Image 1 (tube, rainbow, N blue to C red):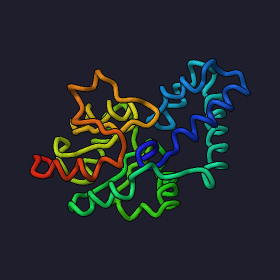
Image 2: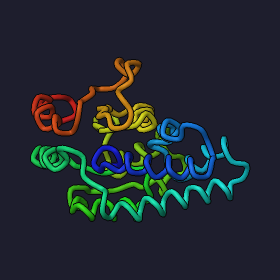
Image 3: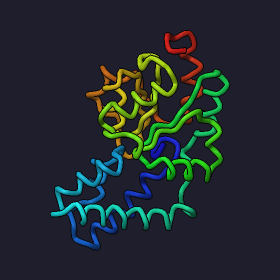
Image 4: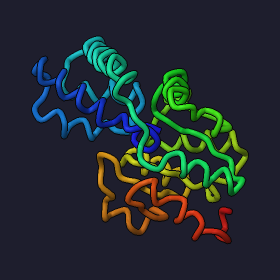
Length: 214
């Protein structure tokens, strides 16, 4: 969702970089942030322990970043290019859609509601609904279970390295659409495909008709 449907990762990265610089927590925070893209809250808290001594301080910084992000998101958050057209192309193909995100469920639904997107999705799994977040396969395996679909017949659109790893580990077909992270050449033999943006997705989808997963 974040970085695929919503242009939220750049906004969080900016907030994170400003805060980490102000607090002197780490060097080059914009680059360090990329390591966290796709992680849920629990994973990010553990990640912070490289730089802070206690869980309490890690939670504190998570809360500060979240609060600053929310104060800006109502005015600055935007959809990624081609989102509506991509969602409509899947709906027109009569394929079920769901969101598997590292954001908490309630927060994710609120973000989608801001742009009127909730009705596109049959289910939503948030990062607070799994015991192990991305890059573990649990989030996507849970999504497959909700849809009662074999993972091998599920197509995942991901922007993050953690998300790609999660989808592949679950046995799903993964299409990478870059946001903050470029497509890794090492994924070439593992992922199903890579697109430059969601704006390319409707045409790409039309070319896949007749595939095993449709």
